Image (tube, rainbow, N blue to C red; front, side):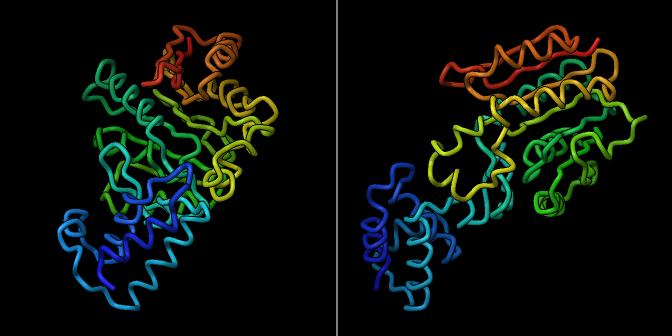
Length: 284
């Protein structure tokens, strides 16, 4: 079978998936198996592939047709220009989170440029936020915590791949294992923020395959914002920044939580769809 025939067979199998792009995804899967770029696939449509590779390809395509996320199939995801290893059991990084990272980059350049500051990332997942900031600012100290071993293992794998030595990952249930004497200039988090009752309405590739622990924010989606906002005060320097990614309709509620706990100068940032997706405040 030649490449074009294989792609057509794949496209037909994945046709109708509401959350996918059958043509592009077929090309990406085959590119991964052949260890070639997309251009090669486009320009070598009549090249024959082995029966073994064709079978392996179709197994992955069938998996995708059932809703299995592309990032898990490929084992990778691009985030802020970094190629991150991704594995099942860890939340897949989203473009929305890049807005949060870009906000923190601007904050550091504006108020801490050239300084050796400390930053804490709560709920590291693949390490996307921590790694992006550690890469951008080699002089800062980045700490990342997560409750589960799987994301910590993957984050450390990504750390090693990127050759970073200014980042430290460790296991902790929120601030439980953080040194009570430690202070941070910035605390950042993309916590679980989906309402428990809304999880069933998520796309199949999210609700059926990504970790529930990284999605479920409790009955109103705000459980982690309350806990982190309350306890972060004990770990922030004066005028230190607490910054979150939030759900598209949570800006007012999270603002109120932060104001009630005594934070000031609350800022909100919108995404390209005009929804507030980042909120930040300073501790007095």
